[in-house]
Structures are given as C-alpha cells and as structure tokens.
Length: 80
Image (cartoon, rainbow, N blue to C red):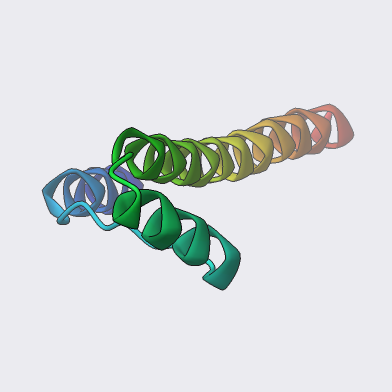
C-alpha cells in the first residue's frame, strides 16, 4: 500500500505542468526589466523561485523519513 502511494505521488509530481509563480516584488522587478529589454533577469528570478520550491519539497520528506526510521528503530528496541 505504501509503495503504491509513493509511486503515485512521484508520478503526480513528474507529470504536473511547470508553473512560474512570483511574489508582487519579483513581478514588479521582472516587469520593469522586461520593459527595459533585459529579459534574462526574469528567467533567473523564476529559476530561483523554482529552486526554493524544490529544496523545500525535498527537505520536508527527508526529515519525515528520518523521523519515521528513528521511531521504528526505537519501537523495535522497546519490544526486546
């Protein structure tokens, strides 16, 4: 059951469309730079936002996995 859920979650993340979200300040910076003809900055900001998103979504499951593994080991020690 857990394996199927994990595979489903991974596939959902891989199939989802790329999204580019920006805060109001980032959007204003990109808009002003695009009007001046410098479109590279907008691409960099979007890449930075996606990097922060990926780091968050990789860190949280890793911490949960470490916590689960540690708790599982403790439960085995208590049974003995």
